[in-house]
Image (cartoon, rainbow, N blue to C red; front, side, top):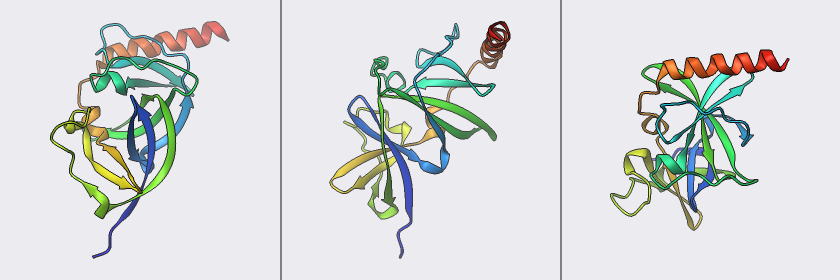
Length: 168
C-alpha cells in the first residue's frame, strides 16, 4: 500500500504548530487594515478588502478559546478557499507566524487526540508527524462551521467600497 503525500502550509498559533493543505491556500498577506464588523462572533476580527473582495478574517487563537492574537511584525493572514454549504468561500486566518511548506505522508497522520491538544479536536483532521515534530492538521470546514451574518458582511463591504471611493 503506497502512502499518499500531501503538502501542508505550517504556521504558529500560541506556540502550536498547525497546518492546512497547501492546495487550499490562495495567498499569505501581512497583517493590515481590518475593518471591525459589529455583532460578529468574538473570533471574527472583521473583514479586509482583498482586491475589491470582502474577506472575513478569523483570529485562530480566539477561535480556539485562547484569547486574541497579539499582533506583531510576524503576524499575518493566510487566505484560504473553502466550500461551506456547497458554496466556495474565501476566508482569512490570522496567525502568529507562517513557518514553511512540509510534506506529510498519509501513513504518518494519526487521529486527533481526545484531550490535551489545546485545540478543540473537532477542528482537527489529524496529527501529522514531520521529522521529530508533530503538526496539528486543521479541518477548515469545521473551523468555519458557524453562520457568518451575511447582512453584516454586506454592510461592511458597502463601508469599504465607500471608503475606497472617498479615498480615490
